[in-house]
Image (cartoon, rainbow, N blue to C red; front, top):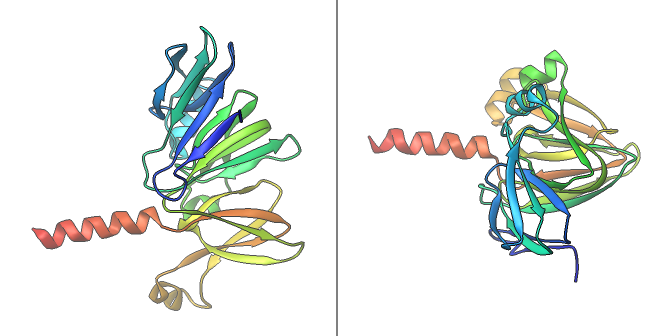
Length: 227
C-alpha cells in the first residue's frame, strides 16, 4: 500500500495519507476532512509565535494542525478550501520551495515551513506581498491551487513569463524578476496583465490555471450589478 494517494485530482481532490503507529503529519488549520479513530488531531504554532505571524502576513493561517496515529495505524483525508488541484513535491534536502499565499496544504514532519522576506519592490508589486512561504528539508509537501496545477520545466537559461496571480510555487534557487507586461505602464495596464514574473531556468515552475484575485473581482462586480 502506498503512503498516500491524491484522489479526484481533476475536480475536487482529496489526499488520503496512511500513517503507521506513532507517525504524524502536519497540515494547515481545518484541512482534515476525516480520519481513523486511531488518530488524534491537535493545533499548534509551527516554530513559535513570530513564525505564525509571518505565515499570516504571507496569507496563510496562524495555526497548524498535527495529526498523529497514537493508537495504531490509520488514514487521514485532507483537502483545501479552493476549487482546485493538489500536487505533491518530494524534497531531497538540496533545495527548498517558495510558495505563494494559500499554496501550502500539508507536509510530513521532516519538512520545515517558514517565511521569507521579499525585497521592497517585490513586496509592493507581487501578489504574495512582503512575505512568502518557504518549505525545505527532506520529505513530502502537498501544495494546493485555484484551478488546475500545471508544471513547466525550464532548461538552463530558458525563460518563462508568468502572470503573478497564477503562480503556485518555484524552487528557491531559481532567479526571477517582476516587471511590466509591456514596454510602457499604460500598455501594461490596458492589456489587463500589468505585472508579470520572469523566471530563468533551470527549474520547475508550478502555475495554476485560474487567478483567485480575478475571481474575487468578478464576484464583487456581480454583487454590485445585482444591487
